[in-house]
Image (cartoon, rainbow over all chains, first blue to last red):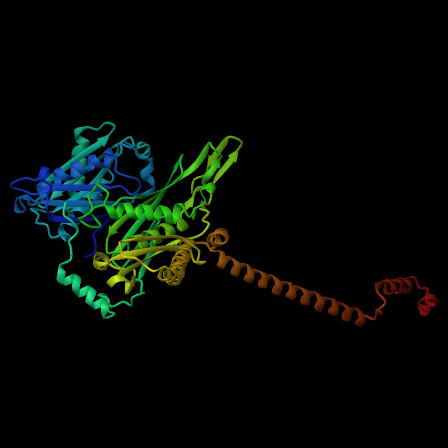
Length: 182
Length: 351
């Protein structure tokens, strides 16, 4: 089976899922599956940034996967970042949002390809809100990641940036909804 | 964590019985290598190797300070038996073999990475990502690493005393690494007390083998290292035979890598100018050929010019003769003409 590879915003991610497999005693949950997400950067070994992304993804996927169908097992998802755009090195090191949609969409495709039972679909998109064109170049605006399920409900919202108003956020949300749900 | 699924006794016996009858599970000959697929990414130094189902992705990255390191970390992507943060035996063996094969055989001239002795140098990091595991990890990782190192370009630098300027890819054409030779690994697996020898065993074959011999050599037949694992004793002469077989395989693999590199260089070369810039460093053999063709063109151009010049001279002489000026040269002709103008009839006739 070819492993799902997904490209978005210049990031390419390949995914693989093992599961349901035997779980370690300390991670075992009596009535549902434990979920483990491994994000591996293109170069070097994982940093706290990858751990942070893994934490976000685990929390998100726990709500999407029908974990109660696989009690006392482990669903192990590995996401390997294959390539990053040239602009990636100019981002602040704490910035984890640009890669997030590619990871979420790859995770969804991987789970589908691996025949893991899911409660709904999942799609994620990145919305950048520049204050003005000049500021967009200097990355002074804000960026938001929205993920929507099959019913059009936002299941994941993450924002980062200098400063943004609630109106801007609502506009970004609408833009994302329009982009994802058509 | 689940262990690697062990083969059942029946499966094990089936494979061994088939090998006794000179049959391999995938129908290959005993000394056949699986088809090698090699592709390069958009960035320099990203090589994707597929040997059967086993695949690798190394990414040499550049940072300052330090030297050449090879990082091999297995993820559960390759096999559920690989656990994050706990190296398996296979991982230790792989990193040790790559270390011996590439680093200690000084395939990469690390002195070339030095900018100012003792003060500044490039650090090259090669990450080997195993995406799928179907045996022959060492061979595939070595191919991937060598291909990536040959593909990689480091940024150009200029040194002025203590000041170092590192040029970005846009400013100056990045330069390739200086590789002294290109070592490749070939793994031999021994079965049935050493009677059966397989080249490039796949995962199930690896699970039933009794011993393995990894031979690393370059295409000139220089052996870089020989490693033998497993309890089975192997005859010294059999080892010599291994190196002979390995040489043929290495030359074949090297040719494939070379061919892919040339294809990639052609793909990157949009205007035709880059070929001339890259030519002398990327493919030495091709470069020699290029120079020969240049030389031929130069000679033909030269002959053409020479012929043109001769024809011109002959034509001029013919024209001069037609005008009634003797072979003696224009000096006399001019003198005669001047004399005619001046009306010195006697002198003219005498001339």
